[in-house]
Every structure is written in C-alpha cells, then in structure tokens.
Image 1 (cartoon, rainbow, N blue to C red):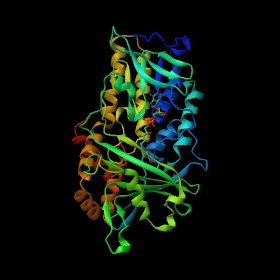
Image 2: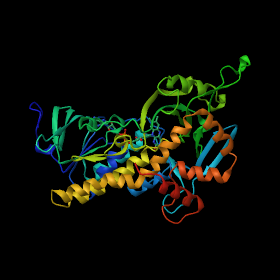
Image 3: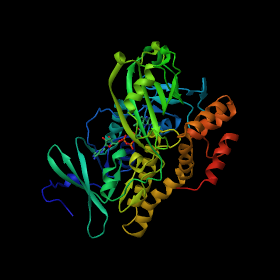
Image 4: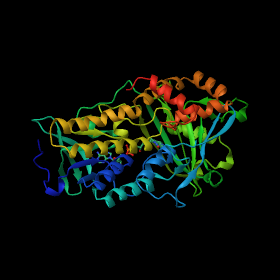
Length: 433
Ligand SMILES: Cc1cc2nc3c(=O)[nH]c(=O)nc-3n(C[C@H](O)[C@H](O)[C@H](O)COP(=O)(O)OP(=O)(O)OC[C@H]3O[C@@H](n4cnc5c(N)ncnc54)[C@H](O)[C@@H]3O)c2cc1C
C-alpha cells in the first residue's frame, strides 16, 4: 500500500485530503475546515499564481463567492450588469435577470488574485495548505480497493499523505481520478479555449461581459476579399485597470476542433477588430494560454472508493456557455456537505451511503440541465445551425431573455416568471445524466 522511499510523518495525516487549491479545492476546504474537519489542501503551485481563464463570473459564480463570505465591494472587483451578445451584424445587451436564487450582477477578477483570495480563506478557516506539492498518484488500500491517501513530490522529497477521504479538485488533468481508473467519457462535450491579456483602455471599463458569436477574419478586406467566418466563439472581458481578457473557445462538435491552431486563430480574429480597441501584438501582456474545458460531467462516477471528483476534475463545466468557476464551487459545496454527513456517521454502510449522496446530489442539481447542454453544444458546433439561430434569435428580445436564462443557468428553482418555468419544464423532460 505505501511507497517505501517516501517520507512518513503524522502531520501528513488528515480526515480529508483536498488535491488542488483552485476554486473547487479552496471552497471545499473552507467549508470543511469551518466545520472542524482536519483538512490537508495540497497544491502543486505557489500563490499568487496565474490560471488560464476568462476571469469572468456570472451571477451564478457571484452567488458562490458571496456564500463563502467574501467581500466583493472593493474597487478590484469589477462589476458587470449583463451580457452583450454580438453576432449576425447585431449587438444586444441582456441585463442579468432579477431572481430569488441569484444576484443581478457579475464580476471580473483575474484568477491570479481570485484563487489567492479563496486559498487564503481556506487557510484562515483552518485548512493545512501545502504548496509546491504535486500529487503524483493515489494510494490505494489493496485490501479494500479504497483510496487511502496520495503520494506527492514536495520540496522535501517524495511524501505520502494519508486520509480515508480524498477530494480530487485537480482540474482538467484529473490525475487522481485517472490513478483510480476513472477515465474521461467520450459521449460528453469537450471544449478548448485560449486567452490573452491586452492593454486596452477603451475597452477595460466595460460593465457588460461581451460575447462574440461569430469571429471574422478581415485580413483580405483591403484586397477586396470578403471577410471570412472563422470557427469558434469569442469574449472580451474588461478588467477595469486599463487591460482586458480576450479569448475564444471551440467545442468538439465543431469540424475544426483539434485541427486548428487556436493561438493563430485568436490573432487573426483580433487583427480584424477596430484598431482603437488596441487588441494588437504591441499591446499584448504575456503569452496566449490555453486549456481544455471538461463539460457536461465528462468524468464519472463523481464518487467511488473514498474519492470525490469536484469541479473540472468531474467535468463540471457548463456545456451551454463554458463557465466553470461557479460549478466548481457549487460541486465543492455539495461535496463538503456529503463529507460532513459521512464523517458524522460510523464507518460502514451508512457512511458510504452519505458519500454516494454526493454523486446523487450532482445528478439532481445539474444532470438534466447538462444533458440538454450536450444537445445544445452538438447543434451549435454546426455553423449553419449557429448562423440561422443567430439571425433569427438575436432580433427577438423575449426569446433572447429565455436564452440567457437557459445558457447562463440563471433561473429560479421555485416561482419566477414565464422564462423560469420554461427552463424548469425543459429540465424536467430531459433525462438526468
Ligand atoms: C481559456 C479559458 C477561459 C475560461 N474562462 C472562464 C470564465 O471566464 N469563467 C468561468 O467561470 N470559467 C472559465 N473557464 C473555466 C474555469 O477556468 C474552470 O472551470 C475552473 O478553473 C475550474 O476550477 P477547478 O478548481 O475545478 O480547477 P482549476 O481551477 O484548474 O484548479 C485546479 C488546481 O489544482 C492544482 N493541481 C493540478 N494538478 C495537481 C496535482 N497533481 N497536485 C497538486 N495540485 C494540482 C492546480 O495547480 C490548480 O490550482 C475558462 C477556462 C479556460 C481554459
């Protein structure tokens, strides 16, 4: 069960090990530590660190941040009022809806700060965080088949950490899940996204998140060629400090997926945006970063043998819009709740049932919605469907109000208006994944 050359130390034992201090890991560690659970939070990097992301929080993400008790009133949190959708020659501003379940504003905050704030919160709550600690594999109890801890590379050398429960919050790489034999599902959508920061004073203070449904290559225009439609969807999110986060994503339902140079695609698109926005090489801040978007629960089961998959490690990105922070934090809250219930029960069948409850709660919370999202992502990967939907949909305000609620998951779970009822009905008829 244990690796003989690894360092063993009682400080390396805990009730729960959380692997990865991204939004999922820090959120789960905070909730558990606040309830008195002894948590080891193992993180491969040191803070503050960057994470390739759009840095945007919809009201769904804001709700999770508020639930943790984070103060978002300061000027470093740039508030937004809604989503601006650009496509089919139109620009439409869709304010975030007023709801019982979610606030009516979004936020933008670079992940360099955001993740640091959440990790600090976990430590303040009492979690024992070890940075520069790269988990290399799960330790499995040969007798029971259950996870019993993890091995990691640390500055002190290879080290073993032991706990009867492990939360895999290690993001899209999902090393711990893979080590336990939980592989990626190919019947679920997958995305890829790239992003870069630019100096752009004219776009930096935008109080709407801007989403581009069509990306145009305008490089041939001077030579009288017509602009060419490029694959993928883009965003421009102002950071309020003279800079913007700009990026694009593509789904595996698109023909161009896997055959595209995403970094070149980003440059081609941005070269065709108005000069005054400043989205040109000379204003770029740092390199273009990219990563996968594991969507629609593309790694399950979410619970098995003492291991809970949380956030990106459990494929929790929303297939409708590529948003992942909110869902990483929501899944973390659900995981923490199940772990607390489990630890309060004696070891055995009842404790195991509480842990199984996490997988059930994930299904109940997002299963049907993500199933619908899978259908949606398959459709919009086809340029003809996307073009028709943009042309017919954008001019219809009522329809777009409904679409916003559906795509951003911003509907009330009880009461609400006609659009909330439509989204809830659609969820009811879709099978849960
Ligand atoms: C280009 C791009 C743009 C995006 N834009 C947005 C957006 O605007 N809004 C939004 O909501 N979502 C966005 N997402 C999705 C979002 O970034 C993720 O869904 C979110 O970060 C998931 O959080 P997580 O905690 O599950 O994983 P992560 O944020 O990936 O955190 C995982 C943590 O685990 C650590 N780790 C990994 N492996 C190990 C290991 N072996 N040992 C120890 N530690 C380890 C990592 O260092 C990291 O700290 C975007 C994604 C991409 C790629």
